[in-house]
Length: 82
Image (tube, rainbow, N blue to C red; front, side, top):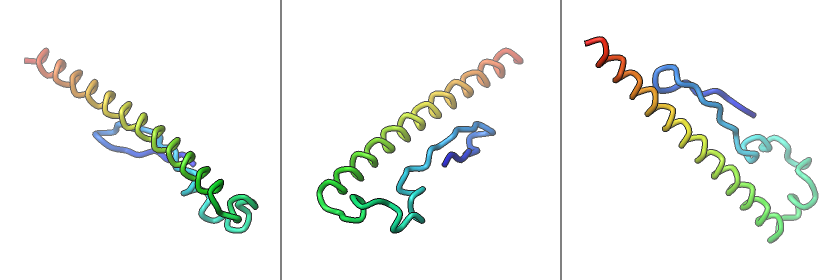
């Protein structure tokens, strides 16, 4: 699931929801390994969470860079108008 978040004066970024958020309603459909639990299931969840954490971190870094770039452009435009 992708949702758009508006912030920092109309700056938009798409954020991928982690699969844990998406699969909350699957219940018994999650699969036999997921249902069985155990070390394999825990390892899979940990790897999946690490992947989404890294992906969200990259998205936040990109958002920060874009925001800084926009702020610099606004400052330059403000200095040119003076």
